[in-house]
Length: 200
Image (tube, rainbow, N blue to C red; front, side, top):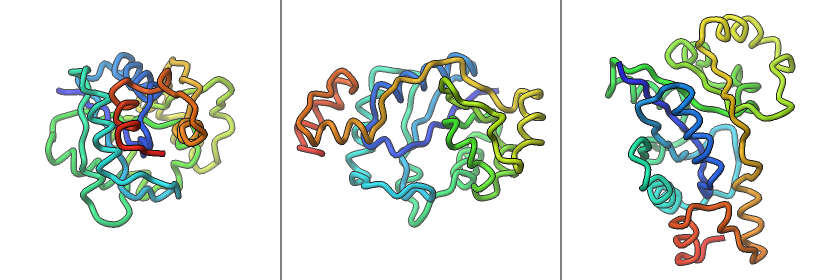
């Protein structure tokens, strides 16, 4: 059975922090591959998104040197809001015998009970959480308490032992807009693409 990781995000732009956590995700969950999923119209976030073709192109460039990584445009080609449960169903049709893992941040985990059909989702994928210093499961809303305890015990919820890189896409966008050099935080091909296309 293949272990496949799904890593959704706006990737606006994708940066070294995303790649670092994807590597830890693959390592700690013994994944055969990690599929990056640039978001279409995220249900939970209202952000100033770059056009889909730019975000997809940058993601493809960022992972081009990593055979374990792939990218899918399935959330970009669907019309309207995209929901994680629907994305997972699509992949389960293509890979019916695979074990899927969904990567999320602790902030997303704390809101998981607001996701569409979340109780169905957690039966279909294992949840891997990028844990930051200071995050605390005890702060989880009561709607998640019984599931959290059972999922931690069964291995259906995995807390990644990886310090996340302290940078966000929004910080990178703001710094680029201010004319600052962000090449230390971006894959070289992505930095070149941003400069060439005069993004941000």
